Amino acid sequence: MYEYELQNACLKLLRDMFMLQPGESIAITCDTESSQEIVDATAQAAVILGAKPIVFKIAAPRDCGKAGDEDMPMEALVAGIKACDAWVEYNAKYIFYSTVYDRIVEDPENRPRYMNQNGVGPELLIRNIGRVDNILLNRFIMAMTEVTEKAKHVRVTSPRGMDIEFDNEPGREFVVADGFVRKGELKMFPGQISWSPRFESINGTIIVDGTQSPPLGAVKSPICFHVEKGDIVKIEGGTDAAEFDAWLKSFNDPQMLKVAHLAYGFGPNAKLSGDIVEDERVWGCTEWGFGNVGGILTSDIPGGIPGASHSDGICLNCSVWLDGVQVLDEGKVVGPTPEIVEMARALGK
View (tube, rainbow, N blue to C red):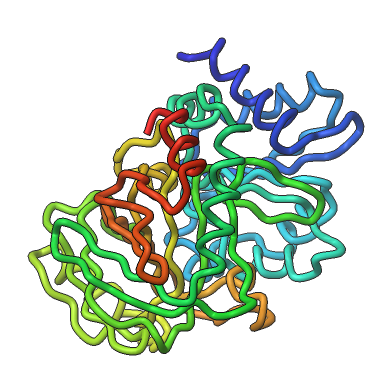
């Protein structure tokens, strides 16, 4: 299925976004829950470009990130992947945020350039890379990043009753999934802007009404997080809320009850599917991470803030104010400049 369109999307990924050169090596990692079709198409695209692919396929760990450490062939993965020029991760039970990942990327001067595509399948890749104007999306994302980085205070609301505020941490770098992966860079799937604000300034209510992953996937009813000074002090809702509350507390790790980061979703073709990689990019959502804070999110805190695991929650149709100026109105871009609004409209939003 999609064998013609998938090959095109994988070529676009490696040629245009990774800028993969003849003779370079690329690690393609996956597990037994990953799409083998997309792994094979990526390896074929690398060969077409004159590069040297190597596929690392492992048995799917029982959990993600550091919670899956014990199931990963750590030394083999670290040595093999770190020796490559580039790395694309398709693992369903993600290596991202694991000890393996931390060891591979710890030295900015000696690491493969990386893109996270956890659990991505053919149709998702075709829709979000093969059929997107990545040049225009890059311009839009960089412009929105610039105005958000300059803001001192941010407020986010949603029609479900979400209302949370925080201050940005001056000088802390944003993680920008702009669609291009240059030497030494660590990038998420395109269509997202992520950052960790000043943790102790985060106060209010987060309402997840899209996806909470792991461990739930698409939620059946909203989960309400009451947050004080960056800490989750209470979780309310239905059975999903109770299950997620128990999951967080099962780690017996205080960091799992802390807000790790947030992100804008700006994927022009992304749709809510229950797949967290795509769900995080649904246009106009905000995504909130809990638990482990990766070092890429805390340029001022080397190594980040370790946690037993990490989970991301999707809040749909968000409104956002930067220093009192509205930039999103229930998911629609309304500012802060006419140029940014025009680019959003050109992207079909």
